[in-house]
Length: 167
Image (cartoon, rainbow, N blue to C red; front, side, top):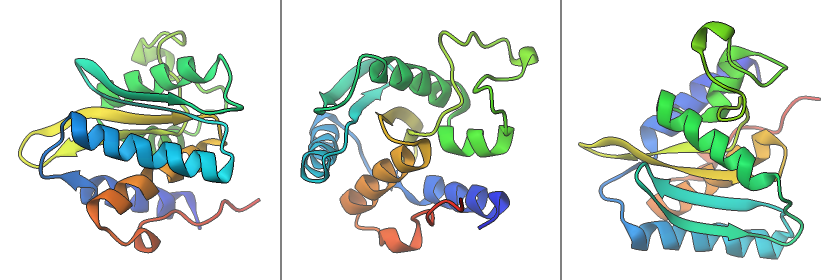
């Protein structure tokens, strides 16, 4: 699948995976589902779910490391600034150095081009937060989030899931 097709599918994910309401209980349910999957599949990830004013759920799985929370924090900052998926930005920007263009004025200590950050959108309110996963290759981090959101929202993930990356 071409990059343009991936970007179009991610835009569809962002438009489809919208909540009627989002609160602490929803964050806990989604975070717990990701944690359960990570334990079952031995995924060495962290998951961080938050609104833009406070954290709601955090878990670190066996095999994750000390850099994963920092990667997640920087992904969260990117979603907060651009209100879109970090993997979509990776594909749109096509920058192997993982930084934004100099003219953006974004410090690499606080912003990173890496997949795994996804906007939490509430109908009528817009993007109110983010879910970030870190620890796998970025396309897989993104996929873990999309799968969890599809399961929670009752959306057929097979229609929204990105295909395996061409090697």
